[in-house]
Image (tube, rainbow, N blue to C red; front, side, top):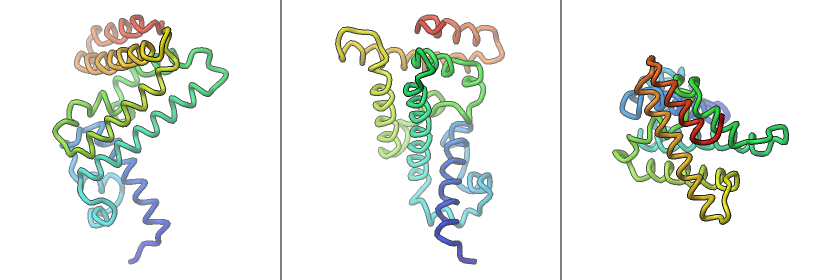
Length: 190
């Protein structure tokens, strides 16, 4: 049965969202195309109508997840009811929920270590996404120059990602919560 263009586009979006979630939860190599498509409620046959390869899907799904995260962060920044958007973003980032729910957390803390083993297209998506985060965070930082603010944004986000990774490794142990708390304090988020 032929699928309409609208349904085909809808299915493609579903695959991208499912892939982003499942890659974060299982890793790039922890889920195959067949299982991914099955989780999206689709057959594997439609995969190659939309994507050149699994690596292509990885790049596009990560791009989609990055755009959603950046959009959410931008909403916090633009919201006049949030007095300190950096605190709001950082507190949510360094939270037990973000630590524990791999499928809904950021790409960098779940997939960052794997990116170097994959196609340049995947690395490029991560590079551009990280640059976008730094551009978003830089104006929120204290400092006398744009360079100083950017350096602080890079250091702070790097600390957040590393802290989240370490907190996951100690998950189920009081050390995990301590890591998150110390990272929030070090970022002046408490």
